Length: 114
Image (cartoon, rainbow, N blue to C red):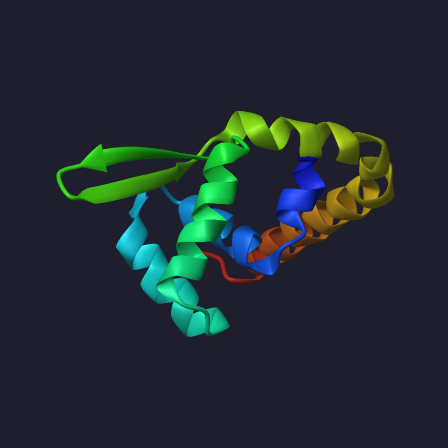
């Protein structure tokens, strides 16, 4: 399955977002996703299985729990595909960074330490 086929589903994208901060138990993921998307625990398990089988997530047992984590190397395909498009937003992000720095500098200069 192609990376964008996997990431095209909003539930799987949300699962990866939740996992981006670190490992999470399957039960916790099921509760969060069930609340957000109104799907059952077995449906969440199916999405986790798709992520796992396609290399986007790993699972490790810890007692009776299953802890899921993102496998970053699987996102490389997406990153490579996006590479030619970065030229569209990179200059805008650089300009934003410059403006933020100017604003910080202006605030610093207008509020000298007493």
